[in-house]
Image 1 (cartoon, rainbow, N blue to C red):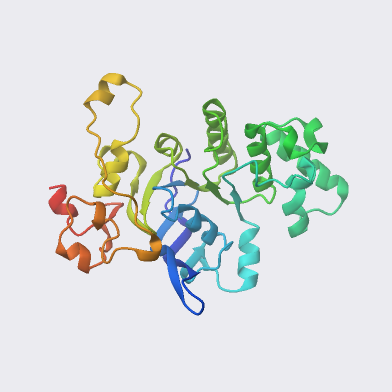
Image 2 (image 1 turned 30 degrees about the vertical axis):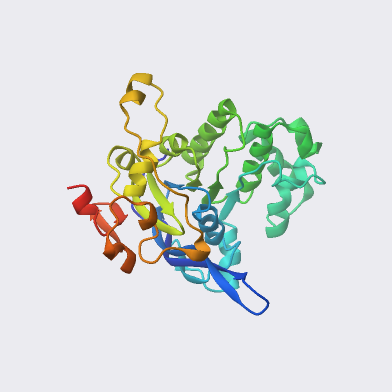
Length: 329
């Protein structure tokens, strides 16, 4: 976990990503996967992004890299807004992604060498075949893979090794920013620790900036400087990693943090878990006003009428809740 730098590398303003879903022969309805999200990530920082399945975490990551074209909103990279195709092409040389599933994100017809070198080929980042080969072997060594594995295919490796191949591919363009989309969720616990530690070492060594998307709250706390909580396409809380575990302010964050498993059984017995009633609503038919109001014990009439503003409650601690002062008073 690298120290925070105060200058933002990525700034996101009012980002929206809607998908048109067909509801009939001539009719469609927008699915609001990401709905008016704003945040920034500082240079050398790791921002953790957590929330239930279907809340829009992965869509945020993919939209940030323009794998999805945003419906609206602004993405600013290193002080420069991404507007033209040339801006996005240049941005993609500096930003990349490690995908969730190492089993499906690697082409089974390509050797490890070709998989890792694919970004080099696309962006024409080498002059000779020898230079390309040396770069591949250097990347394999950096992520702990044997150079003898270069001519093998992805199916010959374990899950942890496949994810290392994915990380080597992500590092090929010498990126400054990496979106890590649940990179350890498909791996065994012992392998998870190795991969998470490797992310930390690479950040220290190369000065990388991460958006780290995950379900495992303990992993996110271990690697992140700050943590953002999403619910139904909206960001409901954003603050320092330790602060959100010790003093969550939004009712949803409180329930989420109470579900974090405690290794000490004595402490675990004293932990008051906050159960949530019902399931997360469909983003196709999201509730009016606050998206969390249908499952919130503090919901009032105002929650149904107005969308809460994502505002700064204390220094660096942002919350979207009408009654946050009253609940935590």
